[in-house]
Length: 209
Image (cartoon, rainbow, N blue to C red; front, side, top):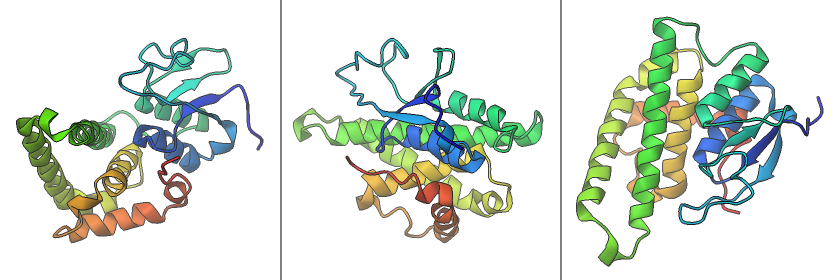
């Protein structure tokens, strides 16, 4: 299978949301169909080249063969799943709602962590202590929930929820190594180790470039 230049992904090796898409693409056997375009986005500086495809100046953004674009990461993952004939999204019913809820937990966790990182990167005098405490409290609560759910997660077929949670935990490793999130969470640690061992995860590990 050769690269299809008409299917283009605005991409960064640092973005956990882009990584979700690329993990899905590898799981579905579609990675060679996607041409990646390195696209830098910053909160305070919209990317003028990206705006025609995504007026929010956010990645990932996938440009389709007809020139139209779709976003965000969940929409792109579902598009790829449809393109591959299914595999990561259960059919309508309880299993689908559960998978989408797991996805929402992982993605919401990523949103929280990115906001927390932005706050921690400010000069100390500009940081809001209440926000830092809130981010820490929500992170502890999320990790406690995931530790509780890890055995069930391990028993379920791999789906979009697993991708989202796995990428969120890997983002902790990438940007929050000081938290030591594995301590006291053996079940979640074991599950994440299986995620990290998947070829799709190994092929998409985040790097600073």
